[in-house]
Length: 117
Image (tube, rainbow, N blue to C red; front, top):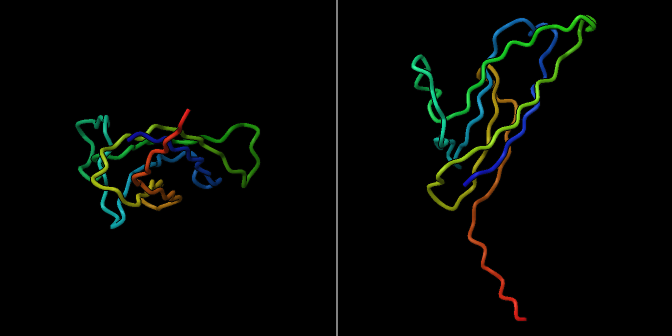
């Protein structure tokens, strides 16, 4: 199964010029992590990142920004996984370990409609 996820990360003024970690994961109904396919981890990647999309980013402050302004970081990515069963799943986005967004979807059998012509 392949779906696409889009996330917009809002970076507050006081979080600029710092390294952050965005993770996008697929979770089952019981919060188990469903490993994503085609994920390549570096040799220094911690085991907790396995099977997830992990992006490190550092948002700088643009010269035209005023004190208190935020920056927006848009991210879009395909997500491919072998789902173990028909069930409800969640795509979860977190920054620095704090969950920011969760989207739920259900995988189910849908009978094919018969058309006569």
